[in-house]
Image 1 (tube, rainbow, N blue to C red):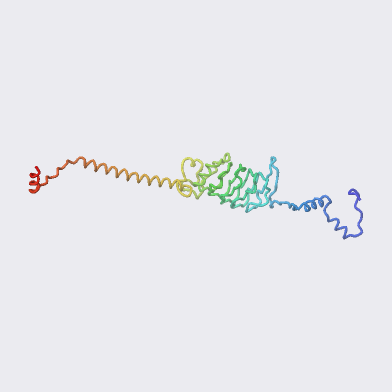
Image 2: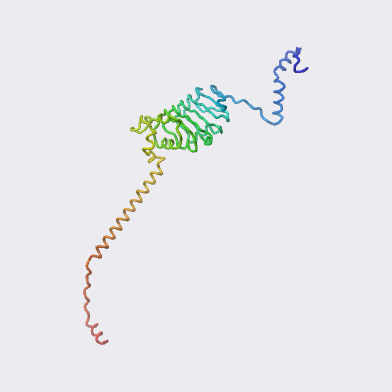
Length: 274
């Protein structure tokens, strides 16, 4: 019977049901070939609920917007170029959260409740990541180390920034997305004279890294200079005092020592010799 012939009636109902449950011949042959070659049967990678894969402008995009996520999801295809995790409940980004995405170019983490970034949050993305959106979160400070090596354009607006040394250093390392600089405003945890003020104009006017962890080297250099200056002052003062005392000694008149009396025995001896 050829594949085009209509199926004949089966006299044994149980046998007919078993045959009907078998996969098509083509799929069965593929399965046998994979098993015979010692391979494994590939299993489909299901996207988390509320997430989906799409092609946007010819680039693989993974969207998980408004999916109620509380952690960075697993199962993201490793050929993803654009990843949208915006409008979720993410509170932190752990170390190496995206290191399995070697071609990721754009990452949107906006409108979450992010309050903490690991120093290695973007590990593995130094050569590919170009756009990063961290706006509308709860970030008061971020570690400078998280941005080392990244050549990115970042949106940091709408966060309650502490406006500290770390943020100042970050702003010196990254490029801000156009039109987002005015949205970097100092929050309630900032210095009292900075609260409610735009921070970007202050970056070039005031050095905030003179003290604390990031300013430790600067403080050490200042202390060393002060110490050396103190020793120099002491040496100069000692030399000045020494020169002044010697000048006073040279100005004093010379005093002749009194003549010693000559004993009679010495005189008689002298006469005899003569």
